[in-house]
Amino acid sequence: MADLGTTYLGLRLKNPLVASSSPMTESLEKIQRLEDASVAAVVLPSIFEEQLTLELEALDRDLHRGGESFAESLSYFPAYEDYRQGQDVYLAQIQRAKAACSIPVLASLNGATVRGWVRFAKEIEQAGADAIELNTYSLATGFTDTSAMIEKGIVQLVRQVKEATGIPVAVKLSPQYTSIPHLAMELDRAGADGLVLFNRFYQPDFDIESLDVVPKLTLSRPEELLLRLHWVAILYGDVRADLAVTGGVHSAEDVLKSVMAGAQIGMMASALLAKGAPYVKTVLDDLVRWMEEHEYVSIQQMRGSLSRRAVPDPSAFERGNYIKTLSSYTMRQTVL
Ligand SMILES: Cc1cc2nc3c(=O)[nH]c(=O)nc-3n(C[C@H](O)[C@H](O)[C@H](O)COP(=O)(O)O)c2cc1C
Image 1 (cartoon, rainbow, N blue to C red):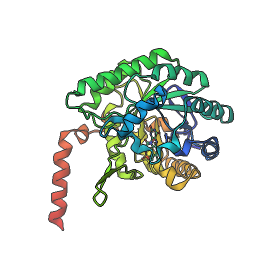
Image 2 (cartoon, rainbow, N blue to C red; image 1 turned 120 degrees about the horizontal axis):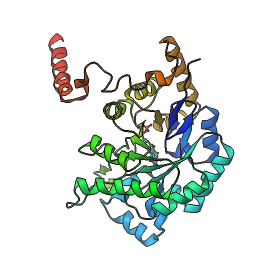
Image 3 (tube, rainbow, N blue to C red; image 1 turned 30 degrees about the horizontal axis):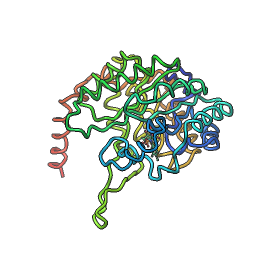
């Protein structure tokens, strides 16, 4: 049988399919269902920076301060109260998952500043997590915040968390940076062990009847994968950090594309939320079937084969592609 084994953040994984942070991994029972279906690793739902400070007044202020980053990030949680977990509950969840499961368990911290993270990162390590994923969900809503300031903040955060802990640290990024390669290189230098591309950008919707701005979360669509493939294919071979794709991975084909772009793993949330834990097995069976039909013996063998470095025409990832894409559409219209 084809060898599905891969590594991620120095961890050995039995295959390249990881359950990303979502309610799919919120309880031991759910994690065990994923493990039974042969998922390679799980990322727990995030604990929020604001939970770490435990300043309830500040939390309340943040929640009601429109346009600030935390209020925006709450769109992850339609019923935030339902998900709120104290620090001890979070640490106990890591311990329980590690005691009951044999797959790697990654903790997830969501925030944008250093507040409280460094201390808590140490506690996460002591609780037994195999790695930490830092979800750097920040939104530049202040008119004096420059890109350079925001990026510097993220890089400093990574450096400090790395100094504080001995376990690997992956950084989950938003796609909304002017230069993804530059930021990736800076994070690489700061010691990030992995880059997870990309966070989804949750935008609130307008309710025009009640004149209200309401949080809106829709599950992802497979088309969202293309943005991730593009940037992974560009970064592959130039950054030391492992690359992971999150966003739009819905099928075995999507996992294969992620690996061919250069990723160590493909992560799934929406497809698992929609289809349930057993869907992991379907994806892995499809993966093996495809590899055997195409005579691939291992995942490693195909990694990066469609990266910018590997393809004969790298302009497919550059500005030239824009022109080609537009003109290909015009030609199709002419034929019609
Ligand atoms: C309901 C829901 C809750 C999520 N919660 C978190 C979270 O706590 N932390 C995090 O980093 N990402 C969270 N995500 C984002 C997912 O981990 C994932 O990155 C994103 O949904 C894109 O992957 P997908 O296309 O497979 O859904 C959440 C996603 C959903 C749908």
